View 1 (spheres, rainbow, N blue to C red):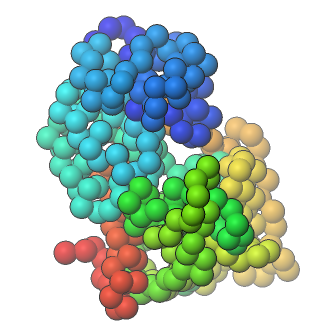
View 2: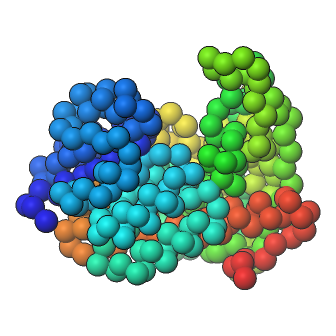
Length: 352
């Protein structure tokens, strides 16, 4: 390995272009070495925009390049497992975009590949939600702010899928995106940082707008991912959870997490575009109203994914968020939700 870590990028979607590429470029001990995107034209555009010297016709060629130390996987989930396992087998560190994989079986395959190469860093991009206030919230929860947790409400409901004239989106294709529904995985991952593990889930889902026009093509595509989902959960310690996921709620409540305890309440509201604008309200027994949390800048967290990945490689330690062992837990939750919807039965966790 050279003094600078040489990175290869398989896929360069919005998150890769907006976060990972500028994040890695800002680090002095990293070189943006190679890229392979979805087409030769898009590969060339990314390489030119970010001064990446090497391009590849296939992701297999990139993974096989012995000059590359680490692979960043920025594709849709349908390729996460295959690219990750191949990269680990080739001796590369891996940072893969969330969701970890399409389903639990693929996630387990990725975990097994990582465990077979413990000398390599394997990391999944974490949910950006809750990074700003998350460490502080975890601290006050551990010190009894909520008291005994009673109820958890997780809401991701907006009108993103409401207009059936909008073009078909890859997130509506289970073959590409897998079993995750809307913001279910990203919000459950976030709330899991603050609450005990889920023991049981009972869910239902449906598609209100199954057909969408296809951009630059004639005809329509049929969505295979629900646009409406509700689930109730049982949480270790006795608390109960309610999840509402919807893309067809006109003037819906947006993205929120509520934690209700016997002594206090925490409500967090997220902005789907600007994660740093999240707002937190807190209140305890005896307060006349909830108060908007305003922490000094030095108490706030933020996006540190790229530096965390490089630091984990350099120090040979587990990344702060998320190693594969952590990420597979939310994969198990989304799998349980999927099974419950398919079979119309409660599903216990962990899955056997």
